[in-house]
Structure formats: C-alpha cells, structure tokens
Length: 209
Image 1 (spheres, helix red, strand yellow):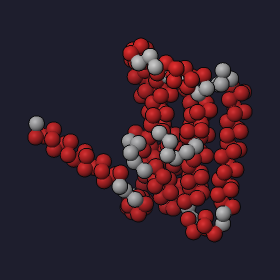
Image 2 (cartoon, helix red, strand yellow):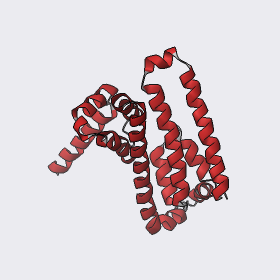
Image 3 (tube, one colour):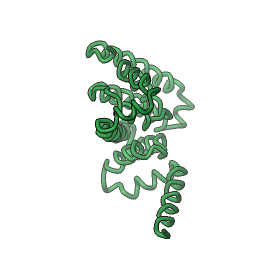
Image 4 (tube, one colour):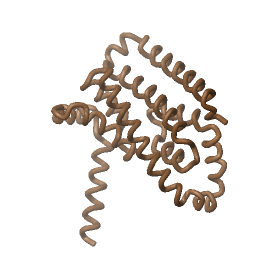
C-alpha cells in the first residue's frame, strides 16, 4: 500500500514538473544530449502524442532553435506523425475488440463516429493544423472509428506539416517575427495552400464519400 502511494506521488510530481517545463529547460535538454543527433528532437514530439499534457509548442520551438528551421521542422514533424500513428494503431487494436461494445453502450457516439468516417479527412486535417487542438482525442477517435488508415495518415501528414512549420517558422526567430510581419502572412498562406491541396487529394481518393 505504501509502495502504491509512493508511486502515485512520484507520478503526480513528475507530471506536474513536465507540465511546467519551459523553453529554456528543453533547450538545455537538447544541448545535453546533442551527441545523439536528431533522436531527442524526434522523441520529444513523439512523447507528446502519448502524453498530451506535454507542451508540443515548446518542443517544436526548441527544435527549431536548436537544429535550425528546416532540420527542427523535419524532426518535429517526424516525431509528431509517428506518435499520432502509434496512438491511432493502439486505438484501432482496441476498437477491433471493444469498438462495437462501446457503440452499443454509448449510442450517442454513433453519430459522431459516422461523421468522422464519412467526413474523416477534413476534420482530422483542420484539427491537426492547430497546435492547441485535442490531438490525442482526435487520434483515438479516428482509431476507434472505421476510418481507413490512408485517410488518417494523409490528413495527419499534411495537417501536422502545416502546424509544425508555422510554429517553427514563427518561433525560430521571435524578434524577426515582430520586425517582419510578412512571416505571419506567409504562415497563413501556407495554411490555405495545404488545405486546398488536402481537399484535392480528398476528391481524388474519394475519402469524403
């Protein structure tokens, strides 16, 4: 009993610390393990997908600062996409065994899952474009639904690219962003272009049917 209490206390203490971690802490961590190359930069966004209380925005900005805009963007993008696929796969495995039971027990969720399956690409893509959307809930819901893997992967692949590039682009040099407002306009333009490209893919592969 004492061991359980101690473990619970240590877990709460650790999660409280991780929730309050800031940019300087992450930069120091990346510097400390710089000999591992891109691995820390990939693992941090991946862990955020598994533990959504972690600050993804801080991880992405720290990667852009430590590795540079393009390398930092790439490492964050790889980690975030891998993490999303892991969560989706776990939810899909769970859903194959208990999905129908969940739908029967909670019939109000049927409408939500039907909507996700029918209009899957658009909501997944749009939610993935914004850093403060409930990504864990999105990944789990998609996994529990009957959404095809290629639809989920395409939406996540494009949506995460938009979100992470904008954060990397804006956060790699905060002073330059204040002095050069065109950066914000460029980030918005990227969002529009990626959304349009996603809709074209959606029509091509019939994922909206």
